Length: 444
Image (cartoon, rainbow, N blue to C red; front, side):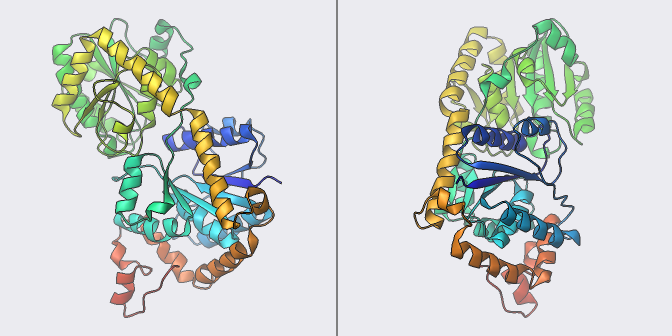
């Protein structure tokens, strides 16, 4: 009997994490070595149709509002019950909230193998969230998947056992980036003018760490030296209006094009000349891989796992975060040397095909699941784990029920990670309990 793996996803919007999770679900389903299940917090998003086409059955939703919300405990119980009824042997969560909810629910259900994920180094977590992730999520997980060596090193430095953290690079389906439109059609579809050379950034406008202001300041410098340069920002989010205002303030409002969410990245990159990422923090950027797979030269900030993909001077350039002057100089040089830019793009595509393929992503995931189930079953193998998880897993589940449901105040205090409170005041933290004159508790 095949062991079942359940992937818990926040939603099906076109984000980097969601795209990678859906892609892995598809690869596992096509492989057939594991039975594949999917659950989510919200079933909306453009990627939902791709999962539905796989015919994996119902996708239960657990509409998590907050760790503080009264429905949290009931949702967690319902999720744990679903895991047991579905005889899930591996739980794989893909982000902070799915890690927290998924790993806790899987521990309650006695799931033999629990996999959490971390896809960035810093800039996305409050101190309380980081503490919850280290002391609860990653402690209860049997493995933590990092999408770059830089992320793995960050986790180990933060105290996560090195033996628990594994690096699985993002995989990229290069066929997805094949252009489907002519250049004229693409320019018309994106509202871009003819006769310009385009410098493009693909990044959401929700998070300040993407640092679009540095991109725009560099754009002003580039425009001063390259008369036909224009600049494209693909992505949507709450920061868009502020960035539009900054472009006008910099005097380049007529040269900057905000095209919103891009449903055809391959066509956009096909009309782009240089591609940029200006983030101050990253894990491993999907955008960089997409740029390289589309044979475009890359200029990116040297953060997270960027240097694990971009080879300085070979497939692109790396610059310091916030250094708009150097970023602009690298872009200007590439716009001025089309042959060198083309050669960089071709080398980048070869790197993606050799190192970041879908086949490699699938092989790493299946090897991880196999190894975890072997260890949890004492060498009996993945098939045996499908028979119910073993006495150890069931005992662990009973222990977790006592910890969580026997002490509901802990569930309430977990919610401190959802607000910008100080970790030292959370009742589950050692420091917080000492301040209250109470004996510190251990989670394991």
